[in-house]
Length: 280
Image 1 (cartoon, rainbow, N blue to C red):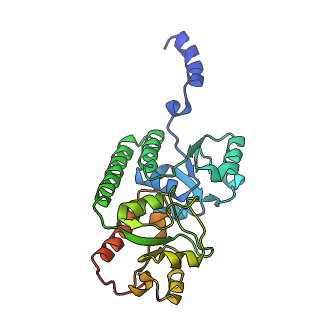
Image 2 (spheres, one colour; image 1 turned 180 degrees about the vertical axis):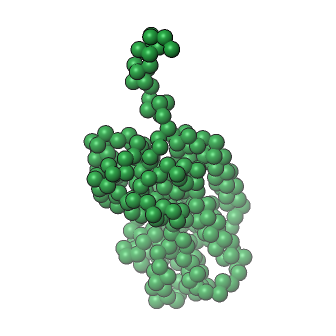
Image 3 (cartoon, helix red, strand yellow; image 1 turned 90 degrees about the horizontal axis):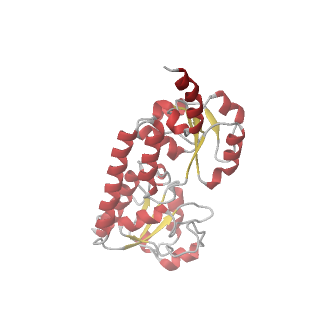
């Protein structure tokens, strides 16, 4: 190597973006859905620590935990020696400031809608050196979304209420990707046009809407309280269904399982198939 090349290389390194210099080898993920995405594209071996809520796949439970939903343990983060920390959205603004102050490279994801998922899978693939696997998975997920959207155009509409949280009684509306899933499955949400994507409601509002199906994702008891109103169509017809929260509340590849589960319940109602248990 010539003396000039030896002199130029350090300066070139300063001019290149970090992603062009090296692929990160020690990644910290600070939300469950990001952790799931990294493993789904084959980059799980690079993850050295996560937030407390990350629990899938099973091996993630053995990793050090450096943060919860609200706060970051800077000492634990430094002990993990990351060369990249991946965070999500404006809810982790304070954590982002702490990470930047520590001088650790940061990647911010902003997923809000279903179509953000394949885009961010591709981005993570590019950043971690797993482009091929990430692109393949992203294409498969995008195709599935397109299939369900096309299917919904001819699907009968069933009035459904999605109980996101209780108490307080909270649902979803336009602006939430769960509302997108309801549309895909043929579920007509009477509260879709609410001003906020996750509005809080009174029980009276649900009674007035009289949904044919009620979904919840927390506990069976969250559905059982609707049994106090036997006049509700969903109660009368025993269409009270508990869905798996991790499949629907994490915008990861497993959201396809959540879509399949919700669409399956809606299809059963459309076909008037009796499901033995009112909460299953």
